[in-house]
Image (cartoon, rainbow, N blue to C red):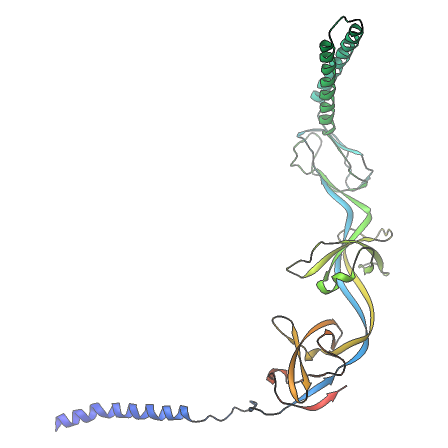
Length: 356
């Protein structure tokens, strides 16, 4: 009797577990009812749509820009030496060629005088030998050697003069000096930054435009821009563009020259560049919400014969609620503007509201 009770207590839980598993399996095989809100297969989806037409649009673009000096450079010496003369007045304008810094050159000047004396003596020797050569008093070889000595000394003199020129730092162009970083008597090397000089009587304007506008801006194009503090817009003429479009931003860098001279304009100032590409009287415009962004490109859903068709499009300019379609649609197409996330390709559609 006790053995029978033990068998019952051992087998009963196993039987219950098998029974529950079978019931659970049968529940999975049952057809689940569709979730609330889910579209049934082959169901007709009611949507709102927009009839594509043409309308005039002014294509304007505003991009940030920067004002730059026409020329700017950092002044450094070509050779090492001690400063014996310093003519840098911070913030002052200087003319091209103005002597700004003079380095110690007494040793070079002494070598130059020595060579000049040697040159004078060798020239006299060559002159006497020239007279002797006329009466066959010396050989032609001896005369040639004296002329060679004169030429060598002249070359050494030019070399010394070049070294002396390197001890003078002059303004490479007319411009305004920055803050100086050295003092009189300081020993400087080619790694020493003396000061900066900028040509500010003429300014450059640099800005970038998106890739799709790169072909519309070439040398000679006049653009308008504004800066804070000036009530009237200024103009600049494009002189050059970068040779290639940058890969990270897909934009083209453009350089232009500011027209006219305005003392209020300063290098480094922020500028708002206004690009006007004219008016397109037959632009295809659709609501912005009709465009579906993709990993590569953009799509819209077109209603054709009650069926949803996905079309690739290229967009242009935008306004507050619409976007221009450059390619992918034609006038008279009907684009879907609602329920975009629930529509699949070849879905059956019914237009509940059509906006023209």
